[in-house]
Length: 287
Image 1: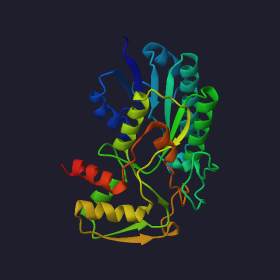
Image 2: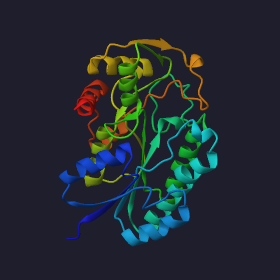
Image 3: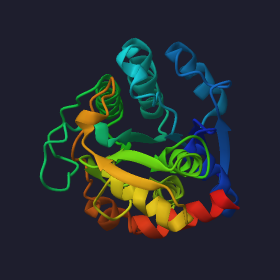
Image 4: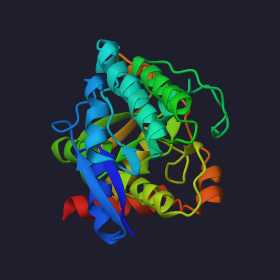
């Protein structure tokens, strides 16, 4: 029997790197990892030829334009990568009877909710990045209604650049640090999300649609920074400030906690507590 071929795009990013690290444990799959040099999502017209050559049974699209503030001045580029390229992949997957898992974001919401956001909660992105990601979701489901979209938030990992590594560096360099305390959500250890994706691919059951995934816990970026400080044993004094004191080109949602019930119930995915995962990641970083 032919092994299922899994194409993972954005293989050098946080999530792609975590899937790559776990892939050795899945000998029933033939993994193909592609980065920007092999597949440029800035040129959606090249995607079909690339997919025709690889012929994947499942595409896991981890590639994205993620420079949230920069997207305000580069909306066309963000749209090419986060929307048009996704539409091309979805179209190809539908025509070639392949599965598609596409990773999206909590930034598709406006942040005005008072309760954990569900998959059918109203979307209303407040920045160009969020708008491009929402258009990508819509294109994926329009071109391939069987596609799976996973919305996630506050992603960090031992790989790449992220909040955890930045905080650890700054706390080592400085005596004091200010972190916003009025944006609420939950972080996602990319390794946990990678494991969830592999559980879905390995599942007998495939159910298209939108799913949420982040770690358990409801915290602010300030709480996250304090947890990093405590777990890493750092001595910097961290103070909470309102977002108004830390203006950024792109507006962030004030509340974007994701409800994970659907992914747990549908695929039996296990969602760890944020602090447990943070501890594991910091151990890897400090090694």
